[in-house]
Image (cartoon, rainbow, N blue to C red; front, side, top):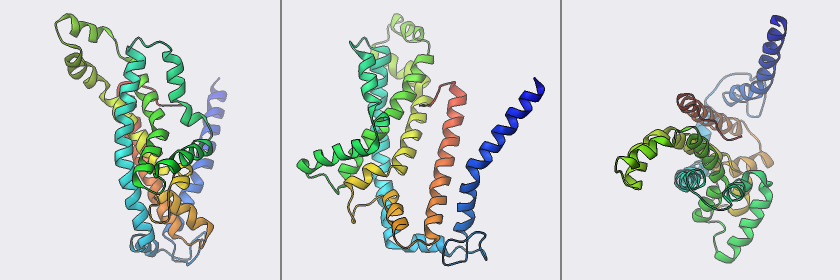
Length: 263
């Protein structure tokens, strides 16, 4: 048994190193002094980070990503929390089918969702607009919030809400004073998941963006297809750092509440 535990632990460590090693290499290359992607780098320099924040194409794409991320993650959190509460606590006919339908954007291949949005946007004039990008990102990130908040609701004792109602609290007051404080870590966890998913979303952004309104994921894709220099490693390192910090925060919230993240 001890031998099996050690073997299993060794395998897990090797798999983790195999997955992390490419990310470490990308981070190292982002500090390279070479004019092209080279590992190991001939020297260390911050020139590619300076180039990243000095190039209007990159700075514009970063600004667009922030302008899309904040409202889309916020809207997805509000709508996803309301939907999760209705599905778990409400008595809605066909709740399981509605819940499955809400999960479709992360089950159906992204290119199908992107093509569908593109077709709808053509009639509404939303292609190449911030509004169109925000709506598309809400569609993509909503399932993460629904899954996370639903998990938090299922681990919360419904008798606490019943006790508040028995003591005379109206439904709104019971939700605000009892349910919401207990559910807040799960809601914040869903918000973090939505933020990461929005920042990294490529396929939908690729279909509904233009050269003037382009998130950073699309700019990275365009850069890889053209002249590749270590600037792409610099922005990739920043994306990795952002996702790592957010997921650490999400893991902390999940451990405090015992909720399960979306799978």
